[in-house]
Length: 276
Image (cartoon, rainbow, N blue to C red; front, top):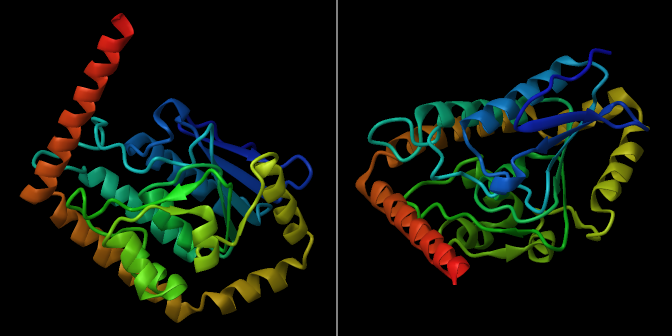
């Protein structure tokens, strides 16, 4: 078995007890694992490696440190590199490719949400087969707040998983929800104890890895049918095209500029307090 590639922003490791399990970790802990272009490119590289490695049957995604992922890093230069847009074309294109991969892979996808997961951390987990969360995890999507739009196929998956009202509370109202609330709603499979959280997820994955391989693959294909995959692929295209339009609109540019000013103000206040 070839060794997994070494990436700066996403780590890849194989479980020592069950090498059919690949563990992918978002690895920008100093930035709360927030998404920039290098991170999403590394995540796509990691996903493609797991797809091409035949011995890998189960893929777990989690975060290094206290956060799963803080979502989009709105102030990162790579995210803002397209003139006149709040989010770069390169970022949107790579994110779209990630969604396509998550929709199409026949391998079992597990999200291990180890901490806060705003924005994309909330949306894309609905493309996983199993979602486990720690009690410290919380979820919200500030799309309307930033003048953006739904992504990660959440405009389809949230409705189908949780119903219209919960979907609207997350996407339209931007309400923050706990892991326990989303477990009751159906987006989270189960909330596991904080202590030993990742080991608990690995325990589930090891149990699944011991099941008949072809039967597991076939039953996933039945659960996520060809028609459903095609529907999700279309949804991804629509959402990403809408996002390309939204990031060029004045309300998004104004909202992000306001966020930048507020962030800089808080930094100045913190620095001033540190000098006292």
